[in-house]
Length: 325
Image 1: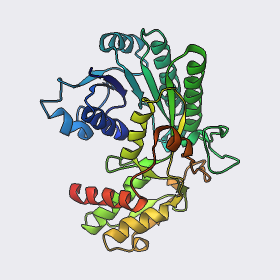
Image 2: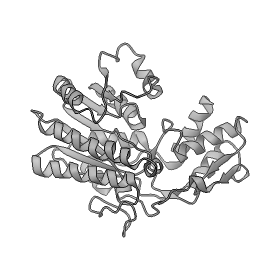
Image 3: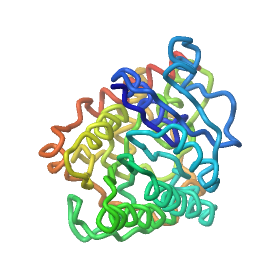
């Protein structure tokens, strides 16, 4: 029997990889697209241009996360076996400028979905993609599923609310509801406003003489960075568990922004110190410095661990940007 999945945020980095993996697994996939979304969806073009997939096993539906009636009707019509909730305002830095809309879509959007799912019969399995930003400035390292939440950004606070609500609905209403608490993960499909993509795109453009220099904020920032397709594989595995639970997905290794610069510019034969300058306007008001994940429970529960090294990820992104610019 063909399984049906509903994906919010399907046009984003993770959503596009998830759509690919679900379709490859034989699923029928329905994606929710914001009404204000750009009609040019480059991350999905290779799927929507395939007549054997689009409107056959892949379907896109317009709805906003605050449009409860439309989503409820869609849920009743599609009757998904699995719901993957990836949508929301996902730019941490931007959340300081738009905290209300960040909380509206990231926090309340998740709660509205949970309320809709609570009324479904049968209730589909549900996965919410959470973030390491919920940990903020933790007292201990590495962070795991029982590490207390101490967010220091509006985005982190919104994700902490959503993550707790998923747990509450699992424990109180019996939903098969999971949180994938993801540490940073990147790919060639990462948005151009993120520092990681700025670096790989900058290295490519400078190499091809399309750009003269690259301006960044704090180059000493460090994170636990992994490869997006590896993490998306973890999402799918989580909804195949016998019992729902929350899992941290992380590499367990620190890297700095300068590590990105070393690998990206080194790959194209340049010294980044000749081209990179810093500007305080790109500095975050609060920048967590101790975030590194412990994914040992994910390894035990779903046999998950990262398959792509840091250097492989950065090189793949630079190569993709060399082809595009």
